[in-house]
Amino acid sequence: MRLHRFYLSPETTELDHTFWLKDERLRNQWQRVLRYRENDQVILFDGVEHERLYKILRLEPDAIQLELITEFERKIPTNHVYLFCSLLKKDKNDWVLQKCTELGIRNFVPIIAERSEKTGFNLDRAQKIVIEAAEQCGRSDIPNVREPLLLDTAIEEYKNKVQLLICHEELPSNNNSETSELPVGIFIGPEGGWTDKEINNFQSEQVGYLNLGNLTLRAETAAVAATTKLLS
Image (tube, rainbow, N blue to C red; front, side):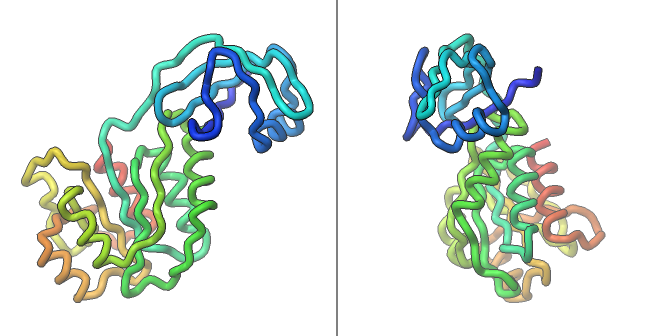
């Protein structure tokens, strides 16, 4: 039987040796959808310290009692990569969040660029997507997702904290020319691409380039390709 993994925020629940689970979302899922019974086993992780196997001792209407069986080794992405992705239309943002969580992005920073056709962003929905993706793929941490920033604001805020790179098919790749102990951050443009003004701003701030080839990629494809290249 396949063991399911579930995230429990350390702010609401401590993964003790034995404890009562009162999280309504998980209780409903376990009892009504997955039909768990006493002695069934689940994997719980808190995104910070623990990844543990538990056995269900008791099922009550308002709580589930769990007992620790064993501790697992946590699986954390090796490299620390930020994804600065321009907001995309329809459900493309959801797809990028899901796939790039599976690949190992640590921080998502949504960007509003000059050619961004979408400016609205549901942070709660985004956080649920990355949690579900982390549960599914087996990683033991939860990526951070923040509210969108204007492009200029993002560059100014992160330029001294992150080694910034830009994806653009017409520019040469130079991300390997210098080594840095800082995390790496990659900027992905909107459907319409970067404007000349934005390219000039990247150059004036000495943002590096990551070349993904001479073909024009969709923004969501570029996000996955760049993530894969930086985390490989």
